[in-house]
Length: 364
Image 1 (spheres, rainbow, N blue to C red):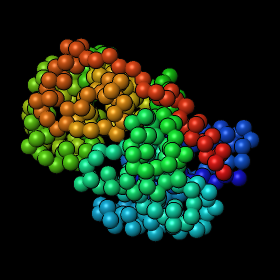
Image 2 (image 1 turned 45 degrees about the horizontal axis):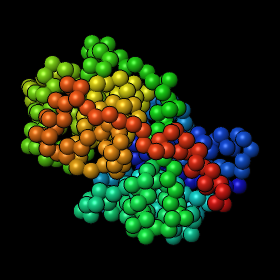
Image 3 (image 1 turned 135 degrees about the vertical axis):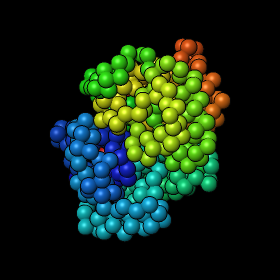
Image 4 (image 1 turned 90 degrees about the vertical axis):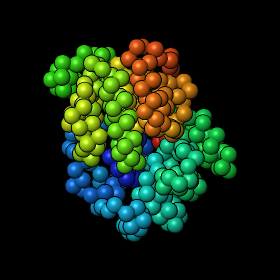
């Protein structure tokens, strides 16, 4: 029996592990000797893990919650290491899969190797090349420790190879998010806000905001948001935002909201519909930019780098950094229909989880 432990550090990780859970369950139903356990580093009552998330993803809630909840990253790392070590000592585990680049992800990776278990990193080889970013340190540590590095594209493979990873440990499996987009494509739900705001398909912009660093520079955020609103003019901008982001936008714009509408966060299937039918997207989320590339929807990313440069090289994504002027120019091009042609990067075909499970099974 191959016992796989999948560690999730935060809400966005669930979207990336859902296809793996489905693939493992299918292999198990087909008679393969394989089993998985889903471990969440956070609290069981985490308010961001609404019941609809798991209903939409068609997956069960985590089997185990470590119930770590603190703001200080060093403290969080220590707590996750202590609690995850206790979990591994009490539960038979052959392989641990960690996702992305969070402090909790790095903590789980360190404990896994100290316990002498196989470590697999999903979405390996992503880099900002800014060592001052905590997540960049996490990425370097996790990739350096991992026995199996699952990458989304050629650029990520090149990074791991340059850093000395043996080619036998690196597997370009594709983008796991695309598995979800293909699986749920016929299940998207038209959100009520579309009719409430009188939106027309292909005639509105979706705006999302999440990065703390972007929100912390209030003056620049106000400049960027002001440019976005003035450039959009009468074109509706829909912003499904959580508490802190919604508050930051309201503070930055005051009474000058223009055609920007802040709405309540949407469920996964509703948000998928909203972005797939938009004229364009303005976001600071790499995940949203990747989904936009799959949907061939023009996307402006408020960052100077992206974990998956394929979204820029062959996809629909454009990077404008945190520059209000560049944002305004890109948004004007988007609204006028003056956008580049895009295509799907290699292996973004919806079979990533299937490849991962097969690799894990063959490696035992």
